Length: 268
Length: 274
Image 1 (cartoon, each protein chain N blue to C red):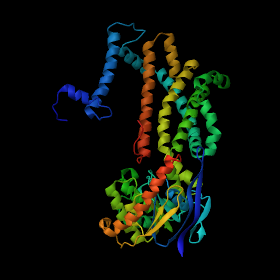
Image 2: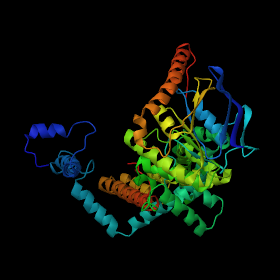
Image 3: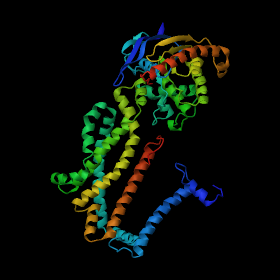
Image 4: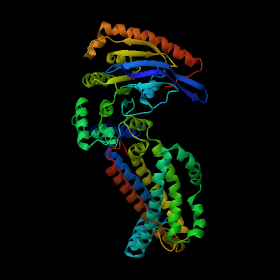
């Protein structure tokens, strides 16, 4: 049985100038337990909106999201999120950031500490437990954000371009680290990105979205062996998958551009 | 540092926009600014170009300052002003901080209060002095009232701006971590606003002095403003300047106190405002 069911989700916004704007158009997807799914699409295609619907932060106008068969009604600790922007609480240490959700859940200090110790080790931040976020690099901050989301032991980890603000080298290292974390943690992950390499490198399956209004244009299984390392990017199998994704994305990007030129600007 | 370039080339390097200059040069410039100011003052006064009652010399002002300090009455005035400002400022802050945070965090309260407070803010506190004299007399309550009107309204709006500026993502993340609305307010919006709150308290403290002195000039039995007005009647220009310098000194001390407080309370803040 699928752990996460996205069932016929549509989202629209009422815009003063443009009237009703359809952002996500009848998207359905079934994501199974422990699966790593990447969602790619041209900018403004509604992929972030879709993720926010799953996270409970955006209300869908039609359809529903089911986690373990239960419809979601809002944000909750069963769906951990990581954003592109740095969202650590600056007044809390690395450890206190990771324990934030556990403290809300009124877990005793000793139990919180056990969880944060394990996660600090998992994201390789030993020695930084008492550091404030201001002293951390961008990559380290995102590792804390991942640990903080995992601390609540969520059913799904939802990631919205979490490495989008990092430089190329850090980003590549973070992708490997994320796969390492995921292989040991076994969590279901939905990962939104516009980086095709990133999507194929990480995913069991890539969902490619159309330009606005976002629909799922193509579902592409990624049968590449695991564990995966950076050398994978240079293989012909990887190149072949990338070409397939590029064909669709390029076509959609051109359509999105024409759409924009025709007077319907695409916002992100 | 050890470069031996020609002076003109090096000097022009100090004038490049937004480029850093060596610490020694910066300190030297700070001293130079003061020296030029006091120098011009000295030339005018010791040179006998202006009369004593128009502008007394730096040493005459210092001597008068010394006499004021030696004479016990001065501290009574300083204490009277300090008492009023601390009271007026404390009441303003105690109300403006929670109200501002609530306004910045909840659109409901923003819509309710912002038009009103935004309008009162443009009414000069000094214009309320006659009204406050009718309502409160010319005692401490009236001075505290003027400081309150001058500080409370703009401070509330500044604080509202601080809490409105807390990134929405910090709030959203809290929800996804299981926070209730109240927890989002108490554990995210409140702590996220605090450094900005203290920063704005520091800035508005300067305004408080302005309003207090105006109130004391209009009607008071003591206080630094009263001392300045009395000195003017006796053409004691040196005493007026010494009093103004006293206020400046108190201002700098309070500012340093707030900075120290910020650094101690919020060691995690990336950078404090100047």
